[in-house]
Length: 210
Image (cartoon, rainbow, N blue to C red; front, side, top):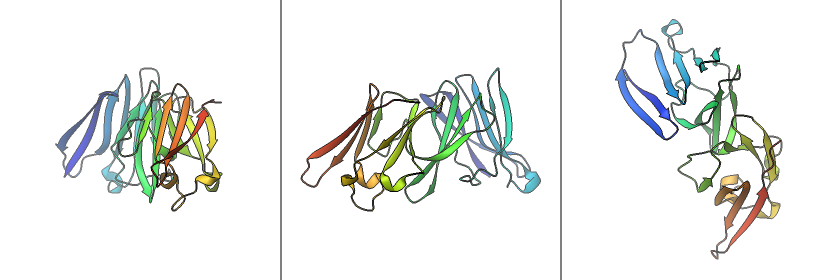
């Protein structure tokens, strides 16, 4: 059996190390140390590796939880460390068509935060730029039909809600269909939609987290 481990020295250095394990050993989906924080997610042979535990913390906080019942999670769990902040380590994985979820382990919280998202720091496959690596953009599950998005601070979970113009409706109607570019700079978020004539229209919003 071949496993992939993620070892993080800091948020700019994510190293992949390949190793092997015997069949009866614990399987570590993630075993990482970053910015004085650690995170381990593993399965044990007791239930044929179908259980899922997480241990995380730092010098002041230590947590161990059973995360099998978190709605979005599957085994094997994603081993992609997407971004790291002062207090948190965030993982992302897919949950269906045009669906991404984030799992945030904050060392000061007893349980991780988990919810579907659109954009996050270090995202490489969409046109998303930000000068604030603590922010990510989540799905507004209360108003998906109104093109609602929620900007969230990773560590504090403070939020700001945005509604894109209804006349931006295009394609299948998902955010990825109607927005071509997102940029955050100096606490202002700018959404850009490029039309067929190559002319772009923008929508700007000043971020106010509460």
